Image (cartoon, rainbow, N blue to C red):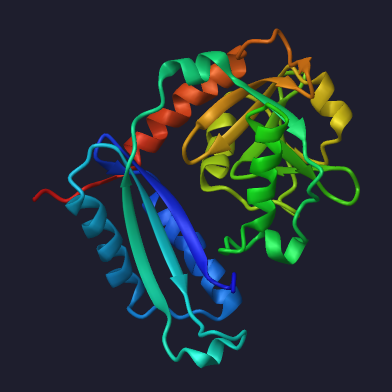
Length: 261
């Protein structure tokens, strides 16, 4: 019924990236929905790590899901929650992915309501519609905006702007899920540039030197075209390239090594 919660993690070079940050967010989502895992959180962490390790892959995707319920809408129909860990093969993105950058558009799908946006629930209908919309418009991603026409997020990633003064502007997380990668990127960026959380209008997007997308998969990738218009020079900019390199190093350094068989 969409009242489950989940997290998507990546294994890179036999390390689970941001394992504890993802599980902490899972814990927060569970608390909002009153979900209690069928085992303790330490055991749950061990199952995630053990399952990812058992896959025997240097690079793979890990999905963690927690939910409950029967055929109706009353969660009490099911006395205990269900817990799944799914590991699928994946390949590292080619360098050309970052060199080319992405094209984006404004979404006709409104941003999620504030109370829902902070929960990583399995109710991802708006995200799915945004993804379909982007494909139909011939771009890579679409951006949602709230009722005040402020930027919220992409379908499965956060969005940031490098303005003409070289500052990183991030939308308030009122109508956007605080992404683990985005939060880490913001901390790293503080040593490289001024970081400001603020309301971002579409005019700010059009005037941006760079637009960046932060997510578990892409880490930090530039948007080089927005609504058919060139962003900055039309190529990934220096601020984004520097932040991407520092972010990737930090993700790997902080990753949890897989268990040896």
